Structures are given as C-alpha cells and as structure tokens.
Length: 543
Image (cartoon, rainbow, N blue to C red; front, top):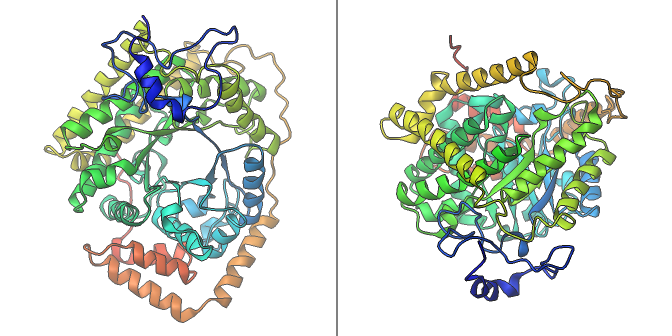
C-alpha cells in the first residue's frame, strides 16, 4: 500500500496546508493519505474517508467547549476564559427553562434557573451573553431546539445591533426537533408545526446567513438516551432525510439549502465502532443526497459533523478515570474525521464543570492535535479489514431502518419518521437498547471500570461548581426590569403579528420572530403566542 498519485494532490493543496512538518517524531515523511491508486480518497464521493482531501493538514477541527451556567454574565466570563485558553469556537448550553421555551418566572422554572446552562429570557440576556465578543470573528454553536428559531432571531439582532453584517455570522443552531420526540423530550408543539419553524429558519438562513448552519441533526441525544451506535447512525440520518424533504416541500432547491446542513454525533467508548459509524454516515448521506434527492453541489453531499464525547459514559465513581475515557472518545472522533469537537469535563457526572476541569478537557484536544501525530494523515485507519467491515455492517443496519421508515411513510421519509414518532417506534427501540446495556452491566457481561469492577479506587468527589441560589434572584430581577422598561405597545404589536403569521402556513415566521426579539418579547411569550395557534404536543403512551 502506498500513496501513489499524491504528488498532484499535494501540489494542488500545498498553499492551504498548515505550516508544520508532516513527518513522524523520527523524521519519517508522511504522505497525506495511504492506499492503492484505485481506492477511494478523502474528498472524493462518497466521502467515506473524509469530506476534504487534505483533512487536518489544512485545518484542524474547531475545538469547542460546551459552556453555560447561571446568568449571562457568568457564562460570558467562562466564554472569555475558554477563548483565552485557545478555544476556537463557543458552544452554548442553555438552562432547562430556556430549553423548554419558558421564562425564568414560569412556575415550573423554580429551582432550575441557570442550573444546567445559561438562562436566556430576552434579547437583553443575549446582549450580555455575547458582550465584548466579536460575532463576526467567533463561530458560535447553540444547543437548543424547541426555542431554536426564537434564540436564533435574538442572536441575529445582537449582530445587527453591534454592527456585524449577517453574512459574517458563523456557527450552528441545533434546531433538531424530531429527535426531541424520539429521545430528549424537550418539545412544545406537535411535530408538523414544529417542523415549520425548522424549515422557516432554514429558508431564512439560506437567504441571509450564508455562513450559518440552521440545523445540526443530532444523534448525540439519541445515543445518550440509550441507543446503540447503529441506531444513532440510522435514526439521525433518517431525521436528516426528513428535514431535506420538508425543505423541498417548502419550495427550496436542494443545492441551495443542503450545504448548510450539519450533524452532531456522540463519541462513545467502543473505539473502533465509533470510527466506523462516522465513516458510514458520510457514505450514506452522500449516496442518498445524490441518488435520491438529486443534489449535485459537492457541499450538499459532504456530511460534516460536530462530535461530543459521551456524557453518559462518565461515572461519578472514581471520576478522574473519566479523563482517560474522554481522551479515547475524542481520539475516535478525530480518527473518524470530525470537523468540530467538544470534550466533556471529568467532573460532569457530578455537576457542571469547574474551570479547571473544562481546561483539562480542552487540553485533551490540544494534545491529540499537536502531540499524537494522528492529524498528519487523512483516514489513517482506512483499509483496515476490521474498520472497513464495521463500516459496511453499520451501513447495512442503517439501511434496514430506512427501509422500515420508507414503508411507514409510503415512500416518504418525512411521513415515515413522523408516523414512527406517533406510534412510539423510535422510543421503544431506544428503550430496548438501553435496557439491554443495563442488563449487561448488571450481570458483568460488560465491564465499567470503577462501577461493576475495579472498584477499590478513591471515590472522593472533587471540588465541583455550585450554582448559588442568588443566580435565580438576579435573573428574575433582570427579567422584571426588562419588562418594566420595554415598550408594551411594541410587544403587543410583535405578538399580534407573530400570531397572524403563524396562522398562515405560507408565511415565513422568522421576520416576525426578529421583530419580537427586537421588542424584547420574552422566550416564554413567543411560546405562548405560538401555542395559541399550533397547540401543545402530548406524547401518546405505548405498550
């Protein structure tokens, strides 16, 4: 096996390469990729080996750290710390009330404000959250779904008010509502009006935010809920196909919106299976996008994804061992060709991460990037009999799921996915997988170090981050102040327009949401307004 034919590719990409020596520690020169002349190459259809020819030789993945707690001031300070430590992008965690599209003063928000992420009620919070940060220079990821369109509107208005042109805003908003019904359960409206909000934001980004990814189709939460790697792969891509069909039905051309799709996968502990999962995902997406949906733009068929190490793999017992788990999971993400990576902090099974734990997590990525040498060659495990077989098998299992959903939808993946949500099929499959793993842990068939074996270590809890109850008081005080000082007439006008536009399925809701954000309408007020038109979804119990 050699890298015959690579000199031409090297010349073509030389001007884009990072200024580092591409060699081993012993000084052995390394080619960009290895394999026979007739083998698939990175950057070539169907992109099994990577979306780009030069991969990390040209650009390392974006090193994101998921951050968010307390008030906007608290999280803004953490953002600045992470950027100062060498982080290349921001990844925003919102608290539970915000994720559920409710305000901090909503009755059920009591005790949850600022606990599991940052509280965002109005544009005022968003202005503080990104205060002093140039949104034209920093890529921002926001993990939120039910309130995704509302929060995106706030972010755009912050850019407008700080003089950042919309074509300079870069980043991703998760906006993957389908997996909420399947796994994470942070939904408000029924599936179809929720899908309308997704497609409206895709239409808006296509027209006005050329550097923004308006959706990140997420397998991460499906896996965290207990699915297998094969299920994560299949359910995530099925959801992706459903969004494609929804956007096509909204009148968008495939190559106008598909390049802005991104994905978000879990990096779990079964090292080789995770690498194979990423390779299979690229191959499946490319094949379906070209052959079923007629995409021709290479960017439409190149699956690009963010990875986060598996929170569910972290243990409260012997928590320092989590550092090793995270390092191995992150390495799998890199060897699988991720474009963006978040590494969990070792103390996250106990609490939100401390500054020290978050810094260790970031340093883990930097060690992989700058010390291990794994970034020197694209798809270094390509051609491994084991990895190639695993890749093929995961694809086969995913295709079985697609066949089932296609049948449910009478030839429509969109209708099939919604039907499978309504009858509880996804939820049942995930529950069965979670039970099977728990049974293996209980019987000892699967070893979890420090939990069901090798339990003689130090289980003393390290210092953890505590959220002072005063955080909730400060947030409620800011919300009261915003409500007292905003224009009631502007709020009423914005809510009236939003309800009117929501009642007309042909109208894009993003302009009305931008107006609402500018008027300091709260997240919860937007939700209540839309509820009056869309209704509320209640999951049907299944046997």
